[in-house]
Length: 111
Length: 114
Image (tube, each protein chain N blue to C red):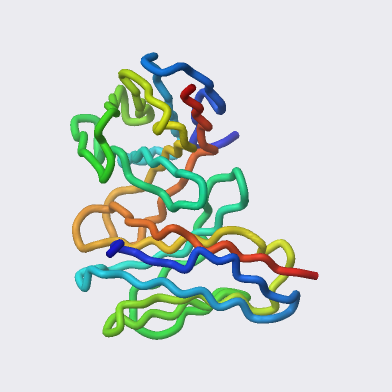
């Protein structure tokens, strides 16, 4: 079992709809959770992080964390074609600042 | 100007050759990382360094070595390149301390080993 798992997709979403991405992790000691967006051939860029159970909203993005069930999700509201990218979930354990990444979910927003 | 730079951006080499990928940063961060990314896969940590005198192996360090020449410079070497090291390589930096410090990525180096 991989430490951080994501559905590879592609997740096809109509423009204006909500894209829902899920990520599960295996280490219950994980403390912080990050969502990175990566356009094809480009470097990852951070869009959200969350560390407490519940929801965290930033603009059109909402991160949801459930530590008991060991999953973190990302919602993209009012999806735009510019949201088409691969979204990487990353998990940070207690010590140090290492991140463990999932394989990413490719999102396609169709006009 | 970019905060994290990588050179070269693209490199084609042959099996058995020694190559070095370089990373420089102007963010003033102590922590630096090297990752590789294979098509359709996430990022795998190769090596990381929390300060100039600190070097640590990541998940996939075999076949690689690193050098932290200064706070701002972190180099990755492939002593004898092999085709399955063909990948996209990213350098990243972060500030020390705290649970939520973001990692900032360089633009990547696309390496092809023939």
